[in-house]
Amino acid sequence: MTSDVDRRVAEGDLGFLDAEALSEFVLRRRWFGAKSREVAHVGVLGAVPLRSQAPLLAIALLEVRFQPGTHDVYQVLLGFRPDEEEWEKDVIAGTDGWTAYEALSDPVLCRELVHLVRGSTSVQREEAAIDFRAADGFAVGGAELREARLIDAEQSNSSVVLDEELILKAYRRLEPGVNPELELLRFLTEREFPNVASLAGWYSFAGRLMEATLGIVQEYVQGEQDGWTFALECLGESPEAFHPQARRLGEVTGAMHVVLGSDSTDPAFTPEEASAEALGILTATIDEEIDELFAGLPDREELEPIAGRGEEVREELRLLSRVAAPGRVIRNHGDYHLGQVLWTGADWIVLDFEGEPARSLPERRRKRSPLRDVAGMLRSFAYAASAAEVEQAIVPPEDWEERARSEFLAGYVPVVEPSGLLPPGEDALRRLLAVFELEKAVYELRYELDNRPDWVRIPVAGISRLLAGSPTE
Image (cartoon, rainbow, N blue to C red; front, top):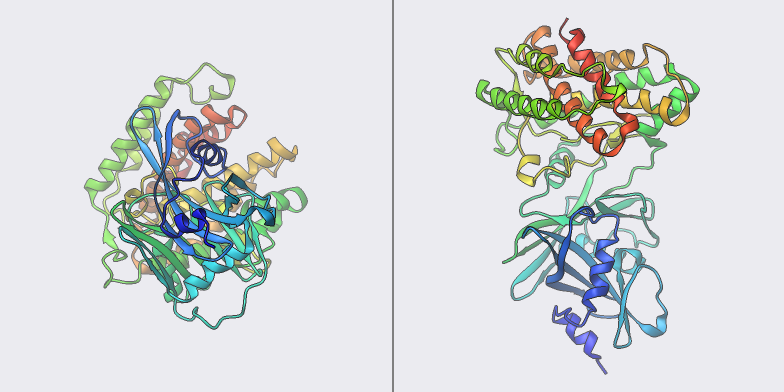
């Protein structure tokens, strides 16, 4: 006999779930990204059932409202098992003989999601639909999946590795529109770019609430370690070992940018000339951030190298931004640093194309100079050198960061230069790159002052370097 829970889940009605228990579950998740804000209410906006036999599976869209009147929407994947099965992992609540829990903790339900992607299935409800789509070559008939393990380390999303061959990533905080990671991975996969984990498929929501990408499935690449861990390991054991790989990382980054700027037929990816007006807007934004930041700098010893030099920094920005032809803008990674690349032991794989989580989805999809990615990686080298000293008491060779920068650029520039994406001439390139490094360093300084005071000296050193004029010499 069908229970009331069976029936209500099948109808997309989750009103039987304990509201307080559901709220507590969401607010304590690592992927809930507004822990410092006061939450006024958590409620289910809508749900779509995906599996009608135990364990049941449903995808719910939850609204988290905050006191000022703003709200975020989150994806929660819900599993339901009868109490007699004694399910204990990531439990949300018990109700009417059933246990509700986080579905991604259940290998059966993870396999079900990937099966739906392979079948390019569409699940229709009266006011909403979830579409599952397989990329070319990934369809029904693939090997039966057996094992699934949830990756515990993720912050803003949730990922599950299946049979060490595939990885399913579920996006948690949702915004209307196509997630840039889906766009970029699909573009690079279709053009057979070798240094990404190929896209296998995706699933998305369409309804009166919004249209949004819910998740992707891609190839799982077994690497030795991410670039950050690899750099720190090199610094501890053999600092020189990193530099040849920094050059190779520059080559891979350059090849990625060339591919992303290679299609003049797709409006979402067609390279565009960067206008002087756009550079002026960028410069004005950075100038305003500098003014605001330096006006409130605390009196601290680590800040002495830049204390009282706000106007000098702003003047340096104005000098740097005098670039007659700033090159072209393209779709790019958007949040590029050592933690976003994987060292396999033989080559680099680029990961996580979502862009900066704090930026809105339209901002993350905007075309920008490829040098913003380059600046992000160069700043990451500075962080790695300092982290080795702060966290491991390892003093890097004095020229380690500078050599890493030089090797990366020596790999990057020759690959990209023939494409016409970069500003013409070495001086223009260095100037524009310095603008983006300054933008990044100002952001870093604000972040470290608020979150990691012991790391303040890293962005201070970056700003001091720019004031010394080295990037534009």
